[in-house]
Length: 308
Ligand code: NAP
Image (cartoon, rainbow, N blue to C red):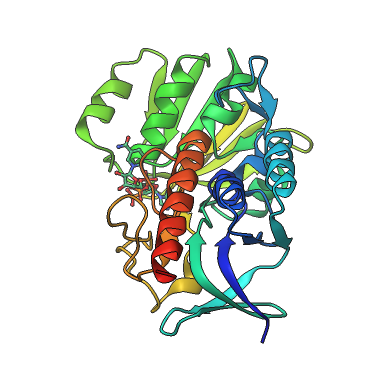
């Protein structure tokens, strides 16, 4: 067993790294378990134009590298492993990685959420070459072009709304004949003159070698196969919070998001949460960073009270 840390932060996106910056400046010597794919969703994002402080925008990976350097400047330590499981039934808490059993007095969980994909080989091959899961990140590259959005929920309709302001034509491809999204969003997108719908249809294949040229669709009612020429494919079938390693250890909601009490607190005293792993509503780098700051303050207060 290793020494007992004061604070372990699990995750290294904007939430985890902002928590690290604040906790390190507060003298807590945080250890960040960054995950093998450190940096979170911004690592697959190109131009970030909405993170305050970068008047000309910044590339997602550069923003994360800067945040990381900032955390390291205040002596944050990192271990580049995935967490396999945790034991919050005992104190100090135990965090099991691929090679270590780490112990900590307090924990901040900031493991984020991952966009769900259709998991078609052609879709996976063309990610970043016309296939995206983030209209705000990548929509600009499809200015005046034709795109499809796959999905019928709130996320999909928000993507459609955003893209309709940039693209020539936005086609919603949905597997049923009714949207799941809230009525207000449905009405908003249906009122757009450049939005149309292909109902009862699923994507069988994304077409194109080095860039997207179209999609092959199957009608779920008739089985009929068709092809549609388009420039971009936005997959918006939901996000999955990265909480598999927490099951049975902490309160999760029906969709697997961590249940939050009082801004940053979880069902386990001493375990705090920040960012998309508990937030399916805002899901922005800046809101995640703000949550990371709050979690660090609350963890600091918790640790102070432990020693009183
Ligand atoms: P969601 O509500 O689960 O909707 C996912 C959509 O994708 C559904 O229409 C679903 O079809 C479709 N889908 C799922 N798997 C698919 C597959 N393999 N192939 C094709 N289509 C598939 O997810 P979400 O839209 O991300 O919303 C998640 C939560 O966040 C919801 O509670 C939502 O209200 C909330 N949210 C809120 C806002 C907001 O502005 N208030 C914005 C975003 C998200 P079916 O309808 O047939 O199941």
